Length: 589
Image (cartoon, rainbow, N blue to C red; front, side, top):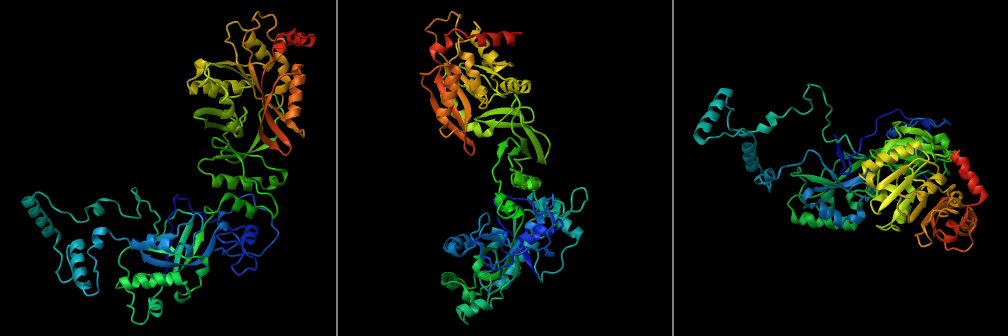
């Protein structure tokens, strides 16, 4: 009778449901072991065979639902059944001849042969004392052995327990724990529960023993004088052998394994090994995301394996060629990243509004785009449908924060929900944060309270130019030493707000000039020179030092840069031009 064995796994996953097979997907994944195609070592969806019946191949378009049962693959392997006490030692000695597949343990448990250590000491160590030890074992476990007569009736047994309790003060009830707990296979409310002996219903891999050795193979290997293999006593394990030994007999195994056979059989009265034929089944939960997508997408198409994570949301940026398969891709991403990822979205269009919000389409999971995330030890509430967030700038934000000191006063012109402003508030003296988006300002205030930093941040909701002029002109405001302008698309256009900023404020020539960190994009061949020219033109200044830093490559040939410089004194103290004055009057109107 076939016995099913479950592999040791560090994480228990759920088995795939038995859905109806999709013809196109099965035809794409089906490849017999005798196929002329050659594949690399290890498991693959193009190796082994499927337990499902193969339909006729037909050009059927991809189904909108993902059939998990179609990814189940069965591999024929061999295994050595050995005592559990020596399985770890044998695994180290035979490491090069074992399966060694990723995410699959080389050792499989044999269910039903586990024996308690106390009971194991009672088991016979030799065949001569087997009968006597078995009688003693039955007396200790069941209270009687064969030939001891009939068991006491319930009344006499109760009287015996009462006399024992009155004489010694306690009585031993055998199997008390077993009697007090509910029966296996039954729920407390009387409902039925499926229990399959020897099979763990969770897990991404399963081993099924299909053929047991009768012991004659070892006699042929070790000689006719070798002892015949008896029934196993004690817990055992399976050492999964390499796939190239799946159809080998004991005589055809490598010499290294035969040496181990002979060594242990000389030391033990009974054989310590048994060669078994097994079937290793890998379910949908075993395969990684890139392997699933390679099987789903047409041959030659780029696999979209990377995505941005914002809390429980996976943010994809699919190309046009992937849109036909977007729901299959989203389902695979959701399945392979549970429970961390609960929603998968795709950006429909580029950012084209003043609030920097993205048009997102929910492809899989729940429809909630409100999430909570942690960055650098600070918690943020974010609604991706109403505010902007980019997790890929976390490293850049950390680099920028390292430039601040405890005595700095930071002005964040385009703060958003506060990834820079709130993180800076934990380090600097004070922060002025502003954003044009009212929803972003609401979340900014909530995040300040959430992180208990509301006393070190003052929040504004106005246009960037007006905010710069207001915060620098305020007599009660603290002298600002750092200005952050993280709006790469348009930030350089706001630099003209610093022209004549200190003119007529009676600040004196010796006041502290702020250091500006402005971000921008560039597609030029020399992005640093191009961005520097745009800054110089915006400030109408030629000679001043600018430190350039390449943040990341956002698209082929398109760089995001950060320019850091101290605003020139001639810029902030110059007389404002007519265009600037007219613009200020128009804004006030």
